[in-house]
Image (cartoon, rainbow, N blue to C red; front, top):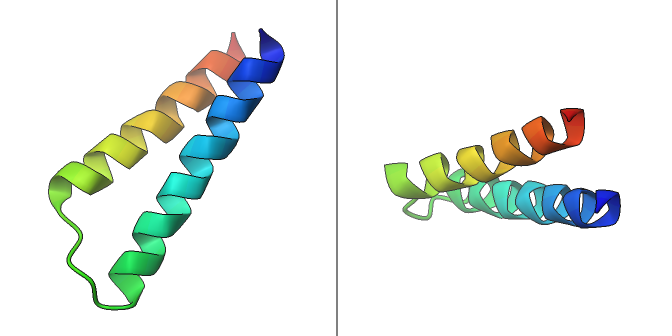
Amino acid sequence: MKEFVVAYGALSAAVLIVVVILSVTGREVTAFMWGRTGGMFASAAFLKSL
């Protein structure tokens, strides 16, 4: 189970990095994208702490 949580955390971090790169390069990044990626990353951090 821990391996899946780590993989989920890595995936959510990668998605967050992509959204940041899109934002920095001037692409349109919606509030939904920020919220979804932030929620993914937060849930991965929470699951890892259990």
